Length: 263
Image (cartoon, rainbow, N blue to C red; front, side, top):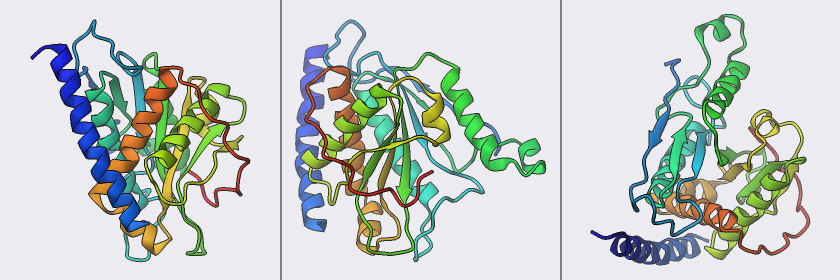
């Protein structure tokens, strides 16, 4: 099949898929590092038809292994939702011609036994993720997380960036715009951050995406569905394309409050 035909097929498939995803959104209103690198699947080299072609993107599924992240009232864990969405995003990126590196592909963390003996597991996990990033020259970094709050009234996705990384801010704005364009529910404004370990140490365009509040019953139900996970992944994917294509972005409104739990 020619690259042109493959490109048309991919876009046609996504057009159909996006229609279903947006409709759904509106209706619903061990210790080893598992690194996966993939060659582009949708197009061949030399046929650069979008801003992602040939880019190396790290997709980080937050938490894992003994670190469950936030827990929902029904027992659902953040680590599982993060991984499901991260895998969908990785598939989309590969089909656009990007090289994808995942910090984990299974229910593991990246801390060592020595980290655990020193009661240093959380920091060891973060350091392990950073080592994955620094093993290659990358073009972008996306970390997938769920938000949480003691109050079940908070909801909505939000994208964070390191306050002194203008490229991260621009990427956060494009992803947020894609969330809104694609009909996601209750999208919150982008938020700068000065303390998140990974964002602080990655100079390339880097964002942490809080896909929604696992503590909000209705949003949890959405996050558990394949269609909403696909919508999130596709929105991050389109945000990355717009960023790398250098499209003009609308100014994002002032921040509407803090993210009540990050990382």
